[in-house]
Amino acid sequence: MEKNAKARKILICGLNPNEYNRISACSNTKEIWDILQISHEGINQVKRSMKELLMRNYKLFSMKESKPIQEMITRFTIITNELKSLSKLFTSEELVSKVLRILPAIWESKVTAIKEAKELDKILLDELVGNLKTQEMRKIELR
Image (cartoon, rainbow, N blue to C red; front, top):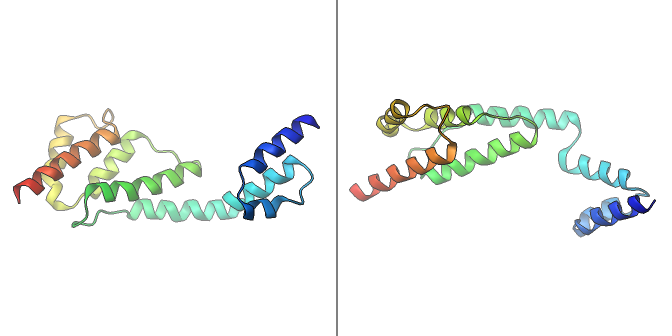
């Protein structure tokens, strides 16, 4: 009972008023956990639908030509992080390859240079992004 009371207190301390109202009638920690899990993650059917939608967004993801690299990476990271939370994991190579594939045609020479200079399975996404941001700043300077 003591452990249940401690766990209940810990869960309750992390809740906002709306969530607290949702669980206030629960008698034990397990009930609280189950209600919070369903309200935040949804039931399996909702998770499956969300995963399918996010995978579709991932597959159709593209970079808008006039947008900066950072904006594209932010949108991309949001999608991949949400997929990770639903147990869909990507290797670093998959993420790097995807980013290189979605870059607009004006990036073709840089993509080719990266592919020729580095082994894609050894480059990290952050390293690639830094490389692309540097190239983007050079393009801006030349204008």
